[in-house]
Length: 511
Image 1 (cartoon, rainbow, N blue to C red):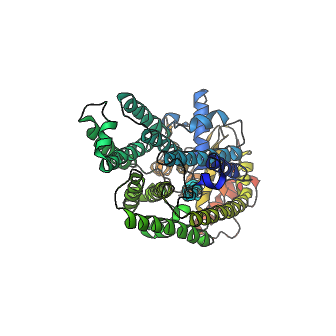
Image 2 (image 1 turned 120 degrees about the vertical axis):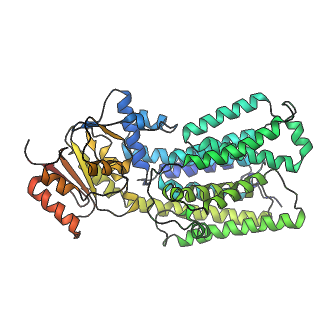
């Protein structure tokens, strides 16, 4: 029994080396694509400008940089913004995010067992999956931090006020990384303390002997309740819009957290990884039932994963808008992978499963790299069009591309533009001296791509003046009445200053 990864490699550094190699694979991608990634780069550029005293403005309106949240990941992005090419910075950030998640999962698992078995390798496909493709980078960084800090807490032989204070500081750090980070840490720590007390009440009291008798159960209960409450209240707004309706239970059984870009083409990957999860989880539970039903400290990981899976099945408008289903199921799979890595399996069985996971993950990396590289031409076209933006101009984008991964491509065009690229999709707060018309205000604050008002706005001569119009997506073959009407206006009053197969830019005729 056993079959630790230490046995596979003969060295304890095998897992750290493997997770580093996993991140280097992402860094070696010729091009990396994610949904929210360009938006994060844009926000960093806006914050960089604000810190240097530069305001992005046009036509009496400007970006309010104070409305942007400053996260831990921004401290990396801001100094590198304007130094590295946006594509390179996007890939670097993705690689660091993957590394952060893997280190967190490794540290959390090692807190419960020195030698981990090959089931830990399931963390690798979880780290490079749908959550990464969504571009939830700050959330993933906070997850890695919460896992590392929870692992530190679990490893403490005794709890004193110093440990409690450091835990609170860790919560603050996790919250700075993402508003859900501190809450996740509290939830994991609270569940660990509850399970530890169920396992051995005497040892648990001894661990808390340095604190008053009532402090331990009070703090444990408060951390669980605070974690659950903060996680729920964190998602009280709706900054993103779902690209498709959620079906939580179906997404769970089809392992959507492991999805990359094509649900149909990736069914073999997801079926194979699902078989690995089910076989390992089934054997671990069967072995536990056959030998002993006694609760063990690592079961806190399984309990946390189970609670998150149950939470992912709850459907409300907020969960739909904020990908809470995807976040919760992704966290659950990570925690279950960590729990499996400290269970006991037959040596040959776990080694075979581990080799299959590594081989399958390697094929996934090759597949996603090739698919992303095929999207590079589109992204380059957007950057090329951005070079023709006029200084201090108000630019309104028209996105004809229905690909959900193209949702924030407008951010690439706006990164180096000192005027305004007018889109609510990229979640920049626009303010003004005198309020524009109602329908224009609605467009600013809406995450939707409702551009049907532009033609009428130009024809009637309403303020503010639309100096340039950026069209993203294939124009040829687009026959919607809305686009044909706008195209007529553009042909009459604007001149095309840039055109490619994907990105077209029109400038207003005259001074």
